[in-house]
Image (cartoon, rainbow, N blue to C red; front, top):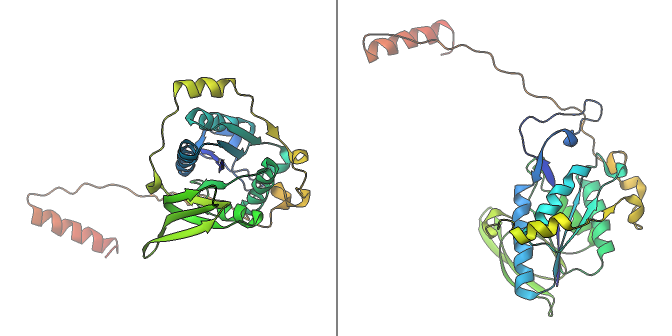
Amino acid sequence: MHAVVCIKSVPDTTEVRINPETNTLMRSEVESVINPFDTYAIEEAIRLKEAHGGKVTVITMGPPKAEKELKEAVAMGCDEAVFLCAREFAGADTWCTAYTLAQAIRKLGDYDVVLCGRQAVDGDTGQVGPGIANQLGIPQLTYVSKLRALDPEAGTIEVERLVEEGREIVASRLPALLTVVKDINQPRYPTFRGIRAARRMEIPQWGAADLPGADAAFLGLDGSPTKVMKVFAPPKREGKVELIDGDSVDGMADLLSDRLLQDKVI
């Protein structure tokens, strides 16, 4: 069985910077981590390998420093990694990201299941996972909270997914794509042996030329059908703090009430 996990490198700080020309996040200038939701996808893929055999391949697309997140996934238990890193991929929106990742998954060959976190914490769109499934033409099972059964030989899978009204049980044919939520498992920590293996691993780096089926018109910022027109931070609220003293609670309450009326707050 072959499980493919798509992860994203996200900023590990609230002090993010926006490129004023492209209106995109300047990822190369901040520390990064694996998108927290993606760690649950990694864990579930490793559990599938432990239960059914096979291997786990982890993929990400990002700047050169994102290779660190791939090595962390290998240290957790993934067997192989692919790094999509090229100038042609920079600035991709969710549609182009899904398109590029789907091309890489096609190049990998046979796969049984693709796993993603439900969304990335830096974008919160939840669009890339379903977009990959659409590009690959495979079923998508979103917001999966429990993997109830998987039979690689029969090519079937049954999951429990979160919906607004509660939970529902869905069965599908394989291959299929799953986006998972935090309820599904508890991610493991990297092992010492895994860390050593990840440190020695040479991760292949693919560019646009390594994806023979990819159309250059659908890559990166120029190929993105959506554009960020403006990004701005809300203005800081100005205010002051004033302490009200009094001999009693009722007296202080009256003073506060008078001040609020005076300032036309109430």
